[in-house]
Image 1 (cartoon, rainbow, N blue to C red):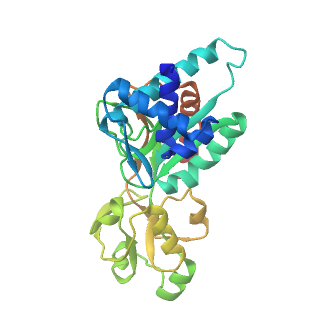
Image 2 (image 1 turned 180 degrees about the horizontal axis):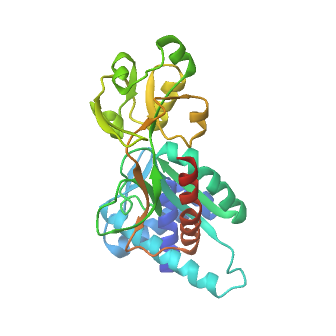
Image 3 (image 1 turned 90 degrees about the horizontal axis):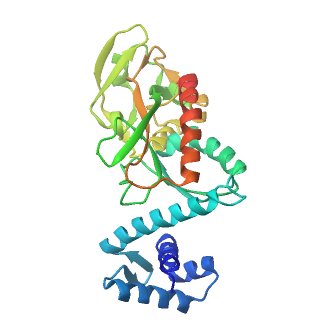
Length: 297
């Protein structure tokens, strides 16, 4: 079998996590996919996939082969696209990783417009607050707070996020409005991630003052969107960016105070070939996110 075809089959199996689904996507039989995988492993002399009752998972060697195969196949797609009449047509998956609240509040609408313009592109989003290994997880683009480290990554600063204090109107009607940062000691505080996980929250005033307030958390959550949901439910006061839709349903607490600005970076693997579709989305994010953050923070 053609080596590029072997790599394509292997890629689809890893992405699907299941031989049957990969066969359906490739429009071939399941035995044909299994024979291709067996032949590939035999030719390379190494186990690439670990079979389980739930599907297949790449071994360490399989992960490395998968990354190289994706890189070669994407390069081939770009070469073919550059010599055909459909050069402007972008197609294929883009894997994106970011925090859930940043995704829903800023990125998702941009993706909607991007896919409407390029309907053959598909988005595979990994959401959460953990620092995903972009190379190991084959992530194309990620948005992260704080300056990224590592020589295997490239990055571009897009702007800053300002976290402010918010609570539900119902909670404030019941517990009262704090008039000073010191009054937070008398309120139910919600935290558990980033700066909200610490026992002391750094606060800055619009007038220039800064202080560090001891905070005893009443409620905990390990996701920023979860913190906002708890605040909406009336559980207490938390921190969230003013640009999100939920902030319009909450009431700003101590409106003259906020946390220090947190930088937002767009990050991508330095060594991996960047397909045209990923480059196009990268350019769109670089163009559209900075004014959005500046306008809404």
